[in-house]
Amino acid sequence: MRPIFRKILSLLALSSAVVVQSSCAAMDSHDKGYSAHPSAQGLIDELVAEGFEAAQVKDTLARAKRQESILRAMSRPAEKRLDWGGYSKIFLQPKRIERGALFWQQNAETLARAEKTYGVPAEVIVAIIGVETHFGRIMGNYRVLDALATLGFDYPRRAEFFREQLKQYFILARDEQLDMLAVKGSYAGAMGYGQFIPSSYKNFAVDFDADGQRDLLGNTTDAIGSVANYFASHGWKTGEAVVSAALLQQPVDKALINAGLKPELTLQQWAEKGVLPAEEFAPDQKATLIRLKSGEEQQFLLGLNNFYVITRYNRSRLYAMAVHQLSREIRAAYDSRRP
Image (cartoon, rainbow, N blue to C red; front, side, top):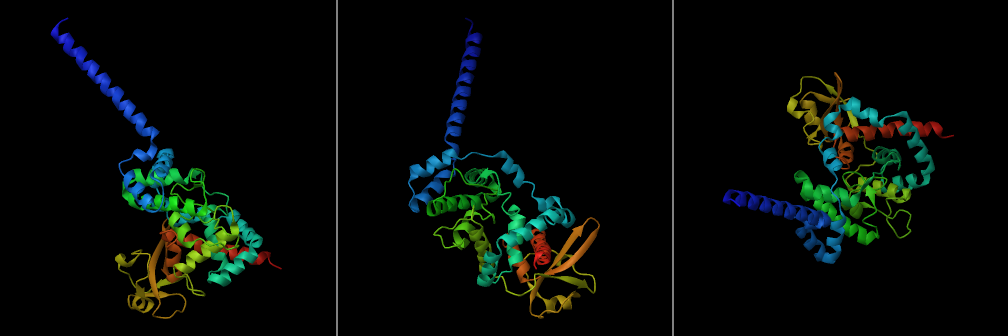
């Protein structure tokens, strides 16, 4: 055999060996799921410090599966694709409003108790559950384990946040006796009627029916109490307004419009800039200036403290406005049903 042929055959053999080795490594990595990910050991060590066995954590991570559809969904949130007109049409539908009134009727006693205990209006609690899961009808079809692992290890922009949520999910599952491989939720790893992420579940869920378990997955009583507790814990002020229509007396600096979700300027300071609330409020109350667009039309609002509290549930002015508007529509529908 000529030397040149021997060299070609040797190169082909070496190339085949590399392909086989690479394939075997990929299969081995796939078999290990996320337990073989370079960032997994740090999480494993943290959970061992929390009392978990390393082998148990590795076995669970090995069962987590990457979900490409989750990564795609994270790249196109509704807030970036829709204006207020399009966003509001999703949630302010007659069917959702009527189902909200019915949910209120079915859980009237629990909602009244939650309002009395936490100072959060029943209609706001109902609206949150309506926006999040259509009153329990749409709680998500992704395994929470898959969602959090996918985002914690393969979504660099917020990997640290979601790895922490994955850690909290391990702890939550142990403390609340949840099957980590069975619980399903949203593509962001949120669970139950109110779509709590693991850290929120751990910190704000309450056993509102006193049966010894904080169950947000199948217990509407616990879900209602937990949503109310979340709002109260984040500073909801009983009896105060959420927003006010804004009256612009003069052109406003564009940098002040939709500048942030947290109110920073007092109403007195806004008045000095030519922005007045349509209703009367204490001048030292803080507000943020909001502009909502519906096609070519736009409206200006002053978001008050309670508006900001709603955004602590979901950091979006569109979300907060949808919850507020839906709560008012549900209240009107519920009142019309009462004797």
